[in-house]
Amino acid sequence: MNVIDFFCGCGGASKGLELAGLNVSLGIDFDPDAAATYQANFPNAEFILDDVRNISVVDVISKVPNLTEEPLLLCTCAPCQPFSNQNNKRSESDIRRTLLDETHRFILALNPEYILLENVPGMQNVNPEIEGPFCRFLSFLSDNGYQYIKFIANSEDYGVPQKRKRLVLVASRLGAIDEPKKTHGEDGLPFVTVRDAIGMLPPIKAGQTCDKDPIHKCSNLQAINIERISLTPEGGDRRDWPSHLINKAHKGYKGHYDTYGRMSWDKLSPTLTTKCHGYSNGRFGHPDTNQNRAISAREAANIQTFPSDYIFKGALTSITKQIGNAVPCELARNFGLGILHHFNQVQEGQNNGSD
Image 1 (cartoon, helix red, strand yellow):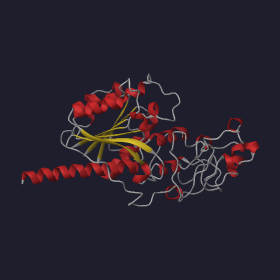
Image 2 (tube, rainbow, N blue to C red):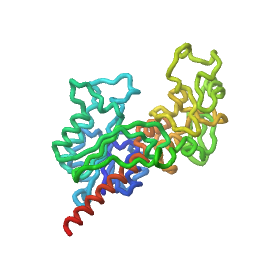
Image 3 (cartoon, rainbow, N blue to C red):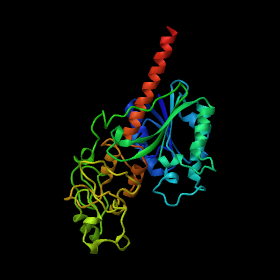
C-alpha cells in the first residue's frame, strides 16, 4: 500500500506507517528544514517542497507513477495551530484553517482506498454559524462514497509515553472501518513512561551537545533558571522555590504550574509543544535532579516515539518545532496496522465471495 503524506512535516506519520509495513511514496510540505529532515530519513520517497495551494494533481501524479497499481493511503495532518488551545490568537481569518479543503481535489483525482487524518481535538469545535473545514471534510467524504470513523485518541493508549489527545479520522471507500485497537492501558500493556523513553540516554548539562549524538543537545539556561531548577524535585515546579525566585507574574497566582516544572520518571510526559526545548515553556525540565536542564531534542524525539537513529536537520529551535508538530510514530504505526488489517479482511472477503 502506497502512502502520500500531505503536510508531512519531519515525517512522524510517515515513519509510523512505514514501520507498519506501508510504502511511503511521497511527502509534501513547505518548510525547508522539515523537508531536509524528511528526505534524510526517506531517501527512496519523492518530495514536493511547496505550499499545497501551489501544487497541482499532475504534480503529484508525476511523482508517483504507479498510483493505479497498488492501494493508496492519503495521509493529511494539516497544521494544528489554528485550532489548538495553546494558540491564544486563533482567528477565523487564519489561512491555515482552510488547508484541509485543499486535499479535496487530490482525493477526487487519486481516489485513495484509505484516508488518515490527525489533528488537535479543537479542529472539530467550530462556530456553529460557520461550517468549519472539518465539517466540510466530513460532508465531502460522505458525498464521495467514503465511510469513516472519527474519535479522540489518547496517545498513551497506543504506546506513546505522553499525555496527548488527538482527533483522528480513518476513512475507507472499501466499507465500514473500526477504531484501531488500543495496545496499552487497561487490558493491554503497561503505559510507556518517561523513564522508558529517555532513561537510557547519557547525561548532559544545560547548553551541551552529546559527543555521540548531535541531536542529544539542549538549551542553555540563565543563572537564575539554573538556581530554580536545582531547587525543583522530580515532578516539582515553582511551588517548591523560595519566594524570591518566583516571577512577579506568578506570585499569588494559582495555576499554570507546569511552567518551569520537572517531568516525573515513572509517569507520562506532558504534551510536547513546538517549544519543548524551553525550561520556562512547560513541564519540560529533565526528571533527573542531577541534570538541571530542559529536555534535549533527542529526548523530545524519543517521547514522540521516533526511532533512536532518526535524523533531524536545522537549528535546535527548528528541530524541536518539527518534533512538537509531528504525529507520534507509534500512534501512526498502530493506525497503519489497523488499516492494513481492514484491507486484508476486505481482500479475504472478496476472495471468499468469489469462491
